[in-house]
Length: 387
Ligand code: RM4
Ligand code: MN
Image (cartoon, rainbow, N blue to C red):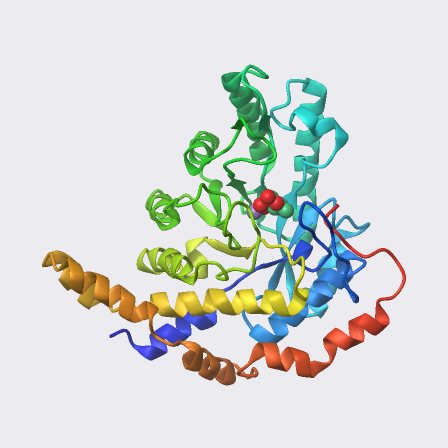
């Protein structure tokens, strides 16, 4: 059996990044339901993210989305984050919400639109220089809706050229994380629909480019842990955008739809020894809270990732290897299921107490009165949203 101190140390060192956009209003395709107390500024989003860190102890960074989080001085925003005990993490670019991008951004047939998109990505790297962020995360809505609409290979050429220009601008410690998504908003072809396409571009770019697995971006039934295993084997798993889904890109709380899948993914990470921060896998959340209160929902997601990770760490590797070598199909499966079926909540509660935290982060957050305080103080101004 794995040594409990080792398990706890691994959990203590594990870092989970929360996304600024999860604290603002977001919606289904039909309606954005505003919530009282929602942040009005990037600073207020960071304040909320700092709460998630304060109660979980493992979420010390918050990802920004540009231009949603555009501010005048990124250096002072980073300093403000530091004052609150957190830091600015991944910078996410947004080239999917401008009128000009109707036919795509970095792969658009019009060179002027491509120029504009690439300039935005370069601007994001300037921001990274000011915030000290290491990762630029790219997701493109680019694709086509109708057969014949554009040239499939031509679009790949334009995409590759745009990415090369951006890659060349990265500093020595900076990375490009390239996300894929099967479909939506493009319904016939998407320019980066899958991990294979993303990986091909990353390999062509160089070692500072790696693939991001957003758990909501696959066809139903896709074996995501297999993709994770392959990318880890190639040293090209840049990170995760965790969220869960029942149908498509639902962006629900992590582990809500399928905790077993989350465990299987984390098991691949753990067994490849890639949980350690030095392994370079970024564990990020990417989710929208449409009907649930946002801060406790982020806390819940962080806890769900921790639970899946704890179970993955509890897999008896020696027993599993012995069963696998011996061709003991049922025995091997039982080793994995034993770990998954372990109630790790007492272990995590104990760890939190050791870390000087409340054993129950959600209850502690509610007791803190922060939720009530922001409802009272954040009146007026324009609530942040993802529009
Ligand atoms: C996209 C993608 C990106 C995220 C945006 C908000 O679908 O998942 O990671 O930045 O949504
Ligand atoms: Mn994502």
